[in-house]
Amino acid sequence: MDMKSLEFLVEIGVPFVKIGSGDANNFLLIEEAARKSIPLVISTGMQSFETVKKIYNTVSKYHKDFALLHCISAYPTPSEDINLRVLKLYQEEFPDIAIGYSGHELDIDISSAAVALGSKIIERHITLDKQQKGTDHNCSLEPREFKQLVTNIRNLEKALGQSVKKIQSSEMACYEKLGKTIVYSKHLLKGHSITFGDLDIKVAEPRGIDGSKIDSIYGKILNKNIEKDESLQPTHLL
Image 1: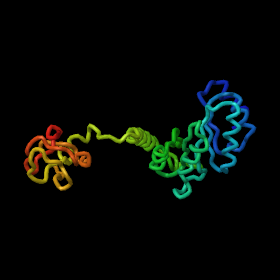
Image 2 (image 1 turned 180 degrees about the vertical axis):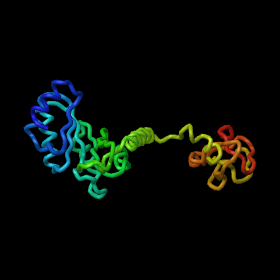
Image 3 (image 1 turned 60 degrees about the horizontal axis):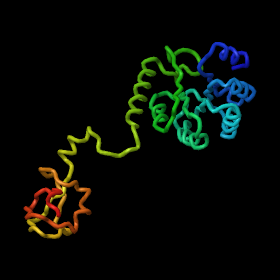
Image 4 (image 1 turned 90 degrees about the vertical axis):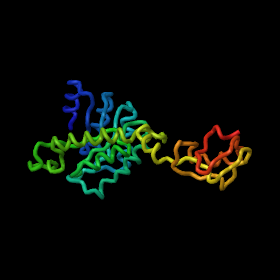
């Protein structure tokens, strides 16, 4: 990209400007683009981490409405060179901007993995024919592949969910069938203080107190006579 192209893009009101890896060390262009206060997406292929930090610092003087994309400028990119963990490095070093991934690998799985690692932007090239002449047609995605990538990412976003561990409603049928409950391992009399050896954990009907609560039951006093293998219910305890 040159300055004239940048001016043209700003004049026609594009929603953001993409600066490719080939211009990632063109700080005359980057600074001028930053001055425009237009959102920027900057790929960082072929650059050292020191240069990436300079990009961040240069644009940050003007605004924080920009994103950095981890990128390896090899067509196609060997899997061993992709180093998706750089996404985490960028996220830690630049926590106040969006971090993304620009991929040139042959498949779509690695791009999905980038989303799992927190990438907020995915850039892939698209082609109508992988056999066309040119540097990147063979590692670009045909429309059907691009559609599949989008589907995969949307499913992955659903699967990532929230960092909250709880029993899901979809698990309840299995929980009712296989979830273990506390039962009595022997016949016990009213007034008995429950000790280790009085209880077992099994699948039982009706369900009783969940097996994970067994430690809280020791020392409790029974208010009725109990049969062996009977499910322990809260109403049995004083």
